[in-house]
Length: 207
Image 1 (spheres, one colour):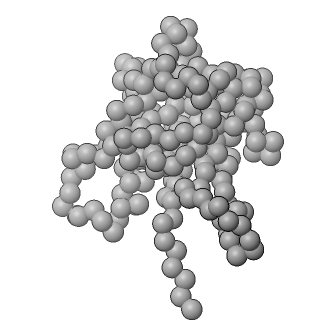
Image 2: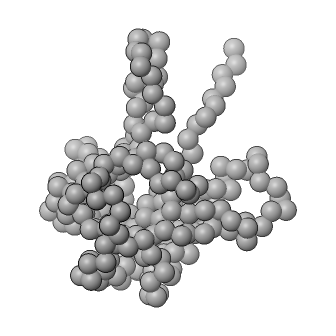
Image 3: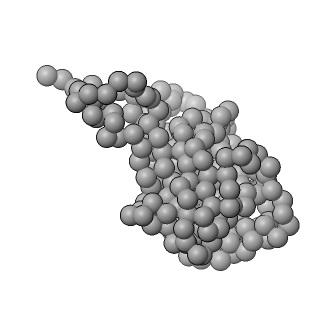
């Protein structure tokens, strides 16, 4: 018997070696954006109890932001290269265009309902300060949902029903890269300390 595993969803995570050096400065940038109240205004009906900046975070002129942006670009390129290693021609000169980027500051009981990021190929979440996220209680974790569904259930498709979603055990300094089309959410956060992330949407373009 031969098993064929088709249509697997590629996920990647990276750890930023310079996280501890830049964490405080990056949080200060996020706090400044919140104080300015420069909110995105995008889909307010699917989020509550959090601040979402405008979608131009990575364009802010700040050394810490510039360093983080470079790390995210390099990581997304590595992820896209791996996912497409059978399809990219060796002669192609490609790069990563981050055309949407923002920060989230999630307060106690904040959450973001399930959604995806259309019109991009790759997205990423950088966990700047996970606060009191907890994988056991599911507080503030990022959840990804399987990309298919079935209206029927019996013992023959338990491999579907037992794998309807995955929860990410997020850590400070971790970057999680995923296909933009996959549905995901941030579960309700019950910590008393604010949770900080930076997120981006990217396209692979001619270099």
